[in-house]
Length: 132
Image (cartoon, rainbow, N blue to C red; front, side, top):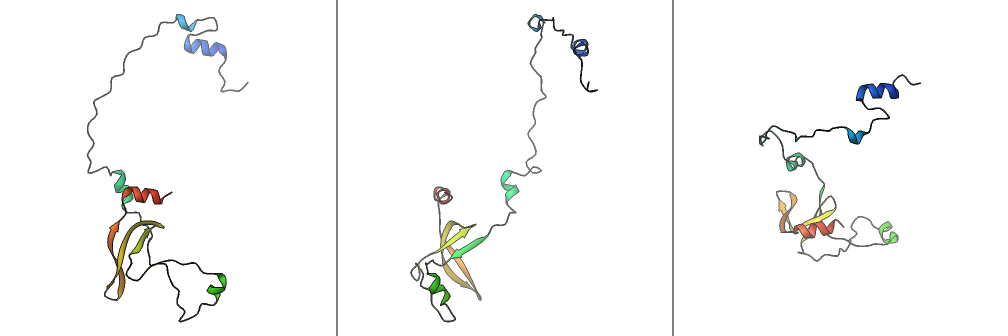
C-alpha cells in the first residue's frame, strides 16, 4: 500500500467519523466570519489598469490611398511609373493604429518631414465596429 495513503481506521481516528457514524447526527456550529474593516488603498502607489498600458508602443500608419493592380502591372513598374490611388487630391488621409482606422487628417510638412494634422477622430462606436 502507498505510504501516503490513510487507512479507514486512521481517518476515523483523525476525524472522529467511522463508517457507522451518521454525519447528519453530528452537531455542527456555524458562525459568521469577522473580517477587519477594509481601508482605502493609496492610489498613488498602485497603478490603475490604464497606467499599465500607457508605455505600450503601437504601430501608427498614415494611408494616402489604395488601389488594386494585376501582377502583370506590378511587374511592369519602374522608376517614373505613376500609380493612381482611390483618393482625390486634398481628400483626408486615414490614420491607422495597428491596422485599425482611428482618425482622418490632412498631410502637412513640418521642416523637411511629412506629418498629419488630425481633422476627425472616429467615435468609440465606429472604432469598435472597425474591429469586427
